[in-house]
Image 1: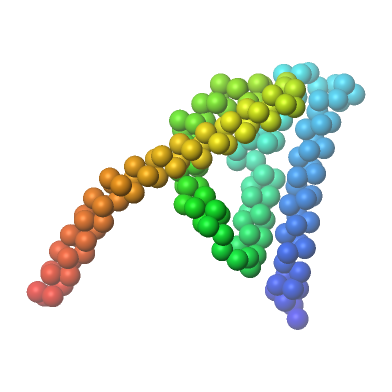
Image 2 (image 1 turned 90 degrees about the vertical axis):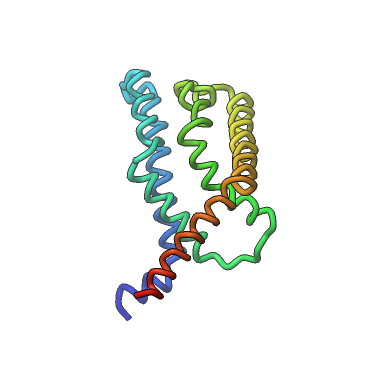
Length: 169
């Protein structure tokens, strides 16, 4: 009945609480930095917010890890939609970090965090998400049709070569 037992028993509430605390801390920090009473200039506040919600931010990393762990331990029935979308996640990640990230880098959605009207923000965010998944589906189809068979043949030849060498020794 040590710490490991307590963690296993209360894992989900601990993960949820940790994720909520980090999210709340980021939200409060971001909102406070934009308030006139904070005394922070608009550009400095925008830079601060960009850092807080951007990549490589420790609280965002904790939230991501907690969310991953929650979903990893969640027993749910398989869904064809979820399974088909899960095949695209690596492509979405790669596109988000490269070609499709252009929407974000040119500030189409965030517009340097000067608070676009909510309908505009939701529209462009939805367009970005749909575009990412549509393009990811296209890239996945091209990979499956043309590149995967080539990789499979190459891997098979390497395995055959290794097996033949091992058998001759």
